[in-house]
View: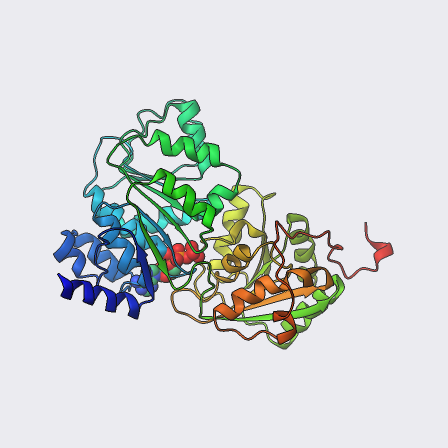
Length: 429
Ligand SMILES: Nc1ncnc2c1ncn2[C@@H]1O[C@H](COP(=O)(O)OP(=O)(O)OP(=O)(O)O)[C@@H](O)[C@H]1O
């Protein structure tokens, strides 16, 4: 027994895994242990191998055995570190096989794009099994009677699921497995009541619940403790840390005009696509798109004013390499897995340290390297230190004058910014 504890401690130390809770299950040495320890079915191991995953990532090593042992869990691990598999794999293990009993697992995601991506990942991992995996679409939520919906796993945004339960009599009393992905964002969306309603609707006493995110503020942990029994806390690295594989840089652009010049200059010197550019509002996304199109840059744009189809097309074109630059609001800052984004540009300074961590985490995924450039103006200087702290914690250098600034407690930093345009001010509409 002591030997096992010692082995666990060594493995955790090697992978920078920190746990708390009673009798925490041993971390995985490798994926093969899923079969020997948990009788995982061959189809799942085959799918993991076919996806090219040779070794479990640190969060997978610890969260999978915790959840597969039936323990509840809240987990924090860097962006791009394989959290999706960490909650989908034990879910498929727990459900074992397809059944007609009704909804048995629910995954909540903060955005429709992330819900769609998670549905695709679930389907890939479930190949060879007959699980019915459904995404809660607008069409589904308007179905007048969802009480007879036949599906094993349901993936949804909180509002759609809440509507389905309240208005369409969706029954979640058989749910055995509930995941709140990007949990801090879910609570931040102002949907605490709706999430609470969903959690209560999942009334099966033997349910296993889990929370995952790359940023886990203390208030979310406290909330988690109030709803979970005997939960295990798993942290990889340090809480609220950016991925270490991203080279991060701050660039002083002086003014709003300076930002456009700096962007054009950097594209003229070297445009290394795919590049993701974040701005603070949909209006600014449209403006910047208008400017880049003038430069004949293959760009597309995604924001909340577009239809669902237009949003999906923008993401698909970027994924397929049809467009090189994607201009986005924070709508895709979380969870979206774009393979090989070389550079994330924060054209507008992020409104919080968490937003920064998630935005830049669209690059440097699954151990690849990435780059993040953050423009700042005079208006952003009071908030620089907060981002600088994230940078230094992940090993990036920051000028000493920035480290000497005082750290500001920020709510949301969204200053009024001059519109993005090369036209002289008196000619703008
Ligand atoms: N064991 C593994 N080995 C190699 N690659 C993996 C492994 N597990 C997952 N991946 C890949 O790593 C990438 C990131 O995984 P995932 O999207 O689950 O990250 P995440 O931790 O949820 O990130 P975020 O916090 O941004 O949501 C994906 O492309 C996924 O296919």
